[in-house]
Image (cartoon, rainbow, N blue to C red):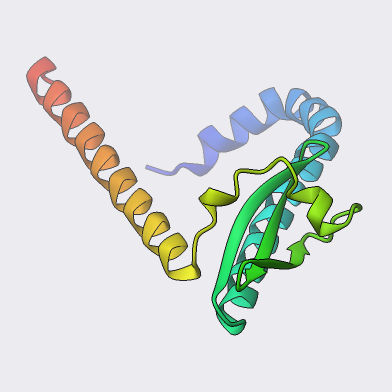
Length: 137
C-alpha cells in the first residue's frame, strides 16, 4: 500500500490553508527560534569562558526582559553574554549573587534535569502502552 496517494490528496485539499498559515506564522516563529538559539549560544559561551578563568563562575541575570549570563572570576564580574547595554555592576546590582555556580555545578544540574526528563518520558510512554493494551488497541 502506497502512502503517496493519501498524502497527495491531503496536499491538494489542505495545501492552500497551510500556505496561508505559513505566510502569517513563519516570521514570528523564525524570530522566536532565533532568540532561543541566541540564548543557548550565550549560555554555552559563558560556561566556556568561566572554564578558562581563575575561580570561574556564572550567574543568570535579567535586564529589560532579556537573559544575560554573567561570568565571574574570583568573585568579580568579568563579562556578560550576550553583551549587556549597562555596566556589569549595574547588571548584577539586584541579582541574587548567592546563586552563582561553577561550570561543573552547572553541568551537573543540566545532567540531573536531563535524567529527570528521561524518567518522566519513559513513565509516560509506559503508561500509554499500558492503556493501549488494556483498551485492546
